[in-house]
Image 1 (cartoon, rainbow, N blue to C red):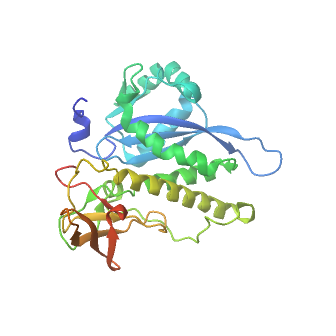
Image 2: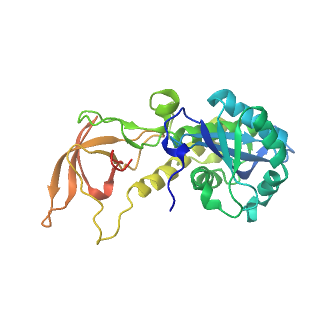
Image 3: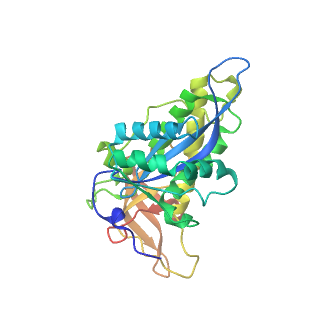
Length: 316
């Protein structure tokens, strides 16, 4: 494995260097009513190289003009990037052939537009998708569960755009590492801190996960999709934080004062329950698998399987 590129490790403003990728298609309605035929729309993802911040845009069609409009919307809200990295279109297969053909046939116009805006556009080598692992991981996080929660639902362009914005906020609320080393600080650093200077929050809403979608109004149905996405993606993210080599290799010990994420079954969207380890209970082999954790709602005792340690300063 090669070293990280300079754009990944040198501090700068968010989205100064971004990765770009497309996903889809998603089917939307151009209006509501009888006799409406669904049309294709696509997800355009921008991901910050340095802070893993994600920005999602909906694109109505795979044309140069539609993409440039989405890029202008991104620049208006996040600022103009210095560099954009993207697949070159030849390593797309199967369902992404349409996207690959679009990028391949529009490389020159896109490059010319970026040059006029003083943006350096970089295409990764042919047949090397691992060069774009950063944005491929972002596409996986967004698309995998979006496709499953939307299913056969027919959303309008406005509703799908709202859902993309809410999914973007959920992805940018994920905890990365402790915000400080203070034992009393239970906050974690998230991509949202680099965007708005504080954790991203969401408006309270009733629980619709178990409701029959046929009897929900459209705004409630949209909230139900958001809650389903949160439940699926949050469990997947927690499982990734809990990856351990089975039985043989020790990947470090829990320590008093470490900031950890508690795995909870029923949490509202964009609410992560954090805590600091206050006491450990070692077993006969000297390894602690149970801990007391101080949270904002008191002290709780949890097994190791329900605790997700965040990255330390040495690992970050």
